[in-house]
Amino acid sequence: MEESAWHLVAMRDDEVLGYGRLNAFDSRLYGISQMVVASAFQGQGVGRQILRKLIAIARDHGASKVQLSARTHAIPFYRQEGFETRGGALSIRQNRRGACTDGEAHLNRYMPAWGHVDWASG
Image (tube, rainbow, N blue to C red; front, side, top):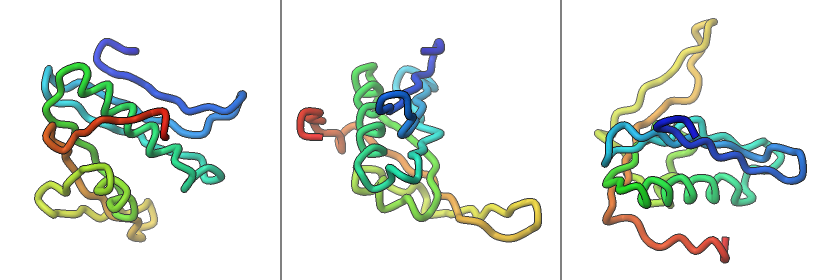
């Protein structure tokens, strides 16, 4: 753990399955970033477990809000976990050749949306 950041790596044996980072911006506001799951393990609950654990860490440290930015194709995943889009504005990224890539939205999750995370059931 850095002074205000937690890095969570999901592993099986020596193989990295996924990763996520949690930052404390202040005592009540936390941010999740760098969520990634290896393509061979996507759709198997790895990202959901990482996300839920990061949210639990934030909650345990007194967060009232967690925010993140997500690519547009991932918005339904985050909404299933209680996040809401912030302002509804999307930004479209361009690669170095000028081609549009996936857009990005900013999402928030507030304390009332948090429930108990049962790690035994996944």
